[in-house]
Length: 253
Image 1 (tube, helix red, strand yellow):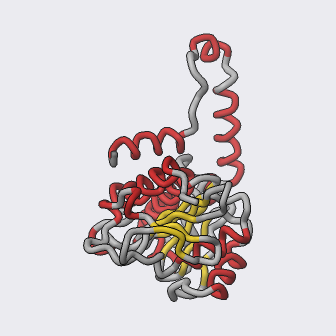
Image 2 (cartoon, one colour):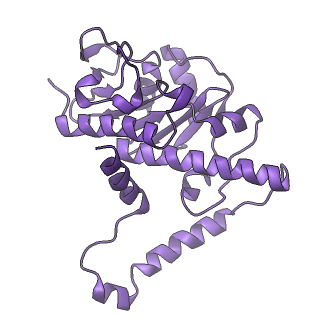
């Protein structure tokens, strides 16, 4: 049974978006992977290892590998294996049925703050909710290559949407690979703002509060109900994350 072609295309786009946004570029051009889980079969599609030129910027649907939840290879190009950290994906998918997309990168600012044990606090509206409940730090930089290590990441993550492997890189999740990808972009943006605030104002710098995040959420809901906007609206409003995915997927098409 093949992985759905439309979903496979989104996984390929997600990998290229990570390169386009600088999350997998430069010395990190081959590092990281996005995956999606097919809700019908439970199979997982992701970037593999073994390409002649191993670069996320080049990934196309036909380059991807498909595995089952035990990491057994179902299909993929000749000579290409599942990624070294496939257990990172399969163990999270096993434990979190609501998750259908996972992204891992070596995003530099998130990595830096994890080594410094500096929490990532919400600093702006864009992506603020994704870090408002805190981002756990997994206390090791090793490759997540076994069931036991994958399960340890799951335990450390709890119900959070993301976690950072100390000195290694963040993992973000979502109800889809699109959401997981945008969550990764948001996480690194918040990390950069935290680093800048750390430099300017010190370790105990101010940040947005949970109340601030909730107030912004409520203002968006109220905006959608304003009579003058409802009268002029010709289509349903889209979420910022959805708009970003459409923009980035167009850029990398």
